[in-house]
Image 1 (cartoon, rainbow, N blue to C red):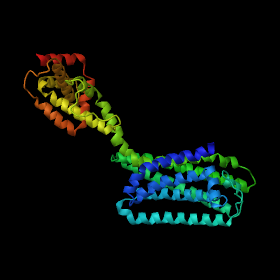
Image 2 (image 1 turned 90 degrees about the vertical axis):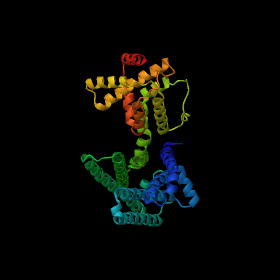
Image 3 (image 1 turned 120 degrees about the horizontal axis):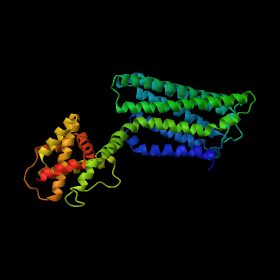
Image 4 (image 1 turned 180 degrees about the vertical axis):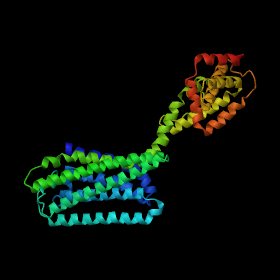
Length: 412
């Protein structure tokens, strides 16, 4: 596979994989115009990249019997893609109170797109393109009557769409920035801002792409050969398509990845000291109150398993816990200037380390006592994940000497 084929088929494969991944959501939310538009923005560039690959160009021309018809199809598909991008931004930008205005704007973009595509078809039909050009159609026929008009119209529409996209993204990013200045920026806003920045970057790339193409065509009109400028744009166009596709996916999947992957991973890492203590102090090696998650389980499932195991372990240690150890460590941390939450976590960490040490020496509890604080901590921990994280961090900072003194106190 040569460089030209790779530049077309590789981004097409990536976009096609993303489209297949979104297919279940498309089937469930087909009535939503936003869902349909997002999937169209994956399908159209994928189709455009496939149709622009030289082997596909030759195959389409042979199948239809019309020389260079594949170039027309690519121009029409990419015009529809530029329109779909603006339609999606219009849907995202509008609120529930602006539905009538949104529909008018969407109709305007779609009507303009249909007019441009119809003009492209008419100009192509009027022109004469007998020599097949899989790679350099634009510059080869730049001075051909009607075809030159088709090329200029397509590129101008593409540049105008890029300018409109960049302006919409820039204005929207400023609005989000003002919201952040008022202290009300959410995770969704942050990912939307990042997605808009990526989209604006891709839009600028499209502007550059269209401008360079127009420059190469104008050079042909002036009798100069700047075809190398046109040929060098193939990888650049592929990159721009991938950038815009990525920008569209960031606001859609970013918040979910943070909530379901990144934050659970951070909590799993923060709970590591406490989890290691739990595993070391299990009464029977390998004993678990319920099956561990599969190796392919997601971070949310792993975190849920570990938190549940920690809660059960805490309750299991209740007969070994000494509240005086917790109180003494709490007062020591407060005396050292620790904030209230850190002092509470330090006291609980000392109590649980001591209880685990006592149970390791005396499997049967010495008393039937059940520290009320243990039940309270377990109850609170089920609702407040950060409480367990605070205890785990206190465990990481807990010294071996303090643990030994606490264990001796409980044993006595």
